Image 1: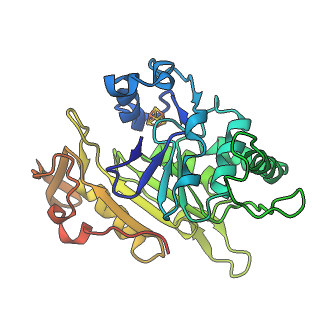
Image 2 (image 1 turned 120 degrees about the vertical axis):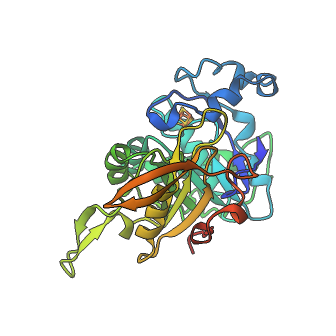
Length: 311
Ligand code: SF4
């Protein structure tokens, strides 16, 4: 909990723990393994989700943590759960997004494999009011009178969706998942929309037509609506292969667009294919890195040494 080695964020915040597997990207879920570890089994919330069977625990004593961090941070929300899981109650989402609304100094990176659930939540016309009510609850907490500051107008707080400091993303490991999840993600009202393509398990085409512009009648692709893409191969013992050309292809798809790209790691089983004859790789060989996750940017091929954030 807290400080993290994940290179695209500065802090993790876990007001929820627990999940269940949903797609190929989950099969070696880091969180499921970590939850069973002796280190985390000291905490009651992890004892209750040990089976990773969809039980989700709301961890009240973690909820207000970001309010006490004065200096601005990028905060990865729910690294030990999926905030879009069907077992996450609306009342928990209200509390979690209320804390985000009260922390304009931070950027919150909300990543889910179930974007349809967040779309459903944000589509409710009462959503902003629920979040406002939770902000008022937090401010009026008798245990901490006057502890937290937030501008109140009479009995109202002014909160509009999308929250300006909340980025929402979905995970994409293969084309099928991209086809299913990205059209859902793109309908979510968010300050920035992003993808985490990690572990990338095959080549993915992100240039599919999403809509025709009403103004110019031009065709707009998924990439016209996205702000950020994180790329990475799988890490750890038994990692599935990630061909470096799958990562390179997405970097190249983003090049003519405004999408920021963050190459996090090439993975523990990074494959280089060469040479290509008529589009067919003649040889595959595994790249060896000193960093076991292939996460040292200095070891990347120069065209993949890219770690951008959205503006
Ligand atoms: S959605 Fe995330 S936390 Fe849940 S099982 Fe999959 S990888 Fe693990």
